[in-house]
Length: 172
Image 1 (cartoon, rainbow, N blue to C red):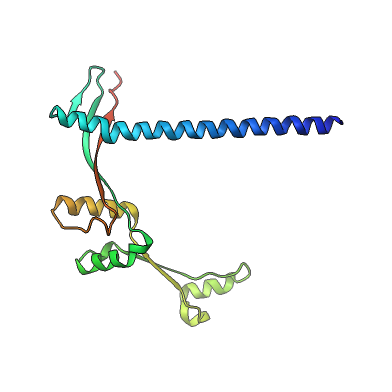
Image 2 (cartoon, rainbow, N blue to C red):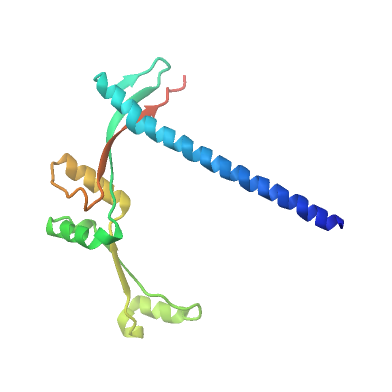
């Protein structure tokens, strides 16, 4: 076998081992993230609730505080109904609209014209997309829940939960 073929075989083995190592590290990272989530969202909040604490300062100067959080989302299949609900309840202002028109690589000049006069320039129908930015939705949901507004939980994919936040001790 030539030296090049021997080197190809060797590098192929190295690649296989590197891919296996990367996959193992990815699995390990995923497991570590799940452990962090479980400690933050389940174990610490539950134990602190059991003993009647919402915040505690630890001997090393760090502190743990349980805060209320919420996850939410508007899936594609619920988007139209969610936007209708927002509009009908006076919250349509958080819905943002975007108009886009696609052009080929050699149509730059036409794109500039259309930016000024979309429909008159090409007769193309623009793609109109509406949506609520995820952070805007989260802030809105938290605000409305705090105000006692009855928001359809399933429509907005709402999942309230408590989360323990660890604050490091201040350096001296």
